[in-house]
Image 1 (cartoon, rainbow, N blue to C red):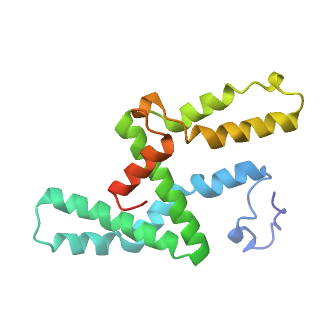
Image 2 (cartoon, one colour; image 1 turned 45 degrees about the vertical axis):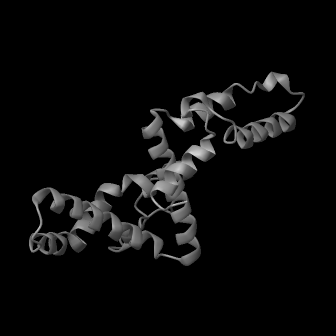
Length: 173
């Protein structure tokens, strides 16, 4: 994945070239998730003291202070992420909203929509189709239709409707 470093160059490892050869999947996993502990520390160094100082100066009950810390931190992170690029920010916000909508719907109905969806996809049997192309089309049709079919676990709502209702509660639809 990366080029070898020159051991005589003191700056060689500054830009990540010191990683051993890893697959693209491992690299993506490391970059997106493996560094989150370090990102949290860096973000904390950036704003934790100022945030706590501001909260401490507020004349509100302790429980409200904890909620404010969470709200201000989450708001700052979302602003930071969405400000990167307008088009990317819109796409990321849409993905974030949908992910939160699914998770809140799961919580409300005590289900796992993605697991249920996956289980349904697994019921489409490859041997029922003459070739891979037909099988792929069947999977795509199932995927499109599943989100529009009333589900018993959702009180006969479709997954799309249940998620939309959940998002509407928060003004995210």
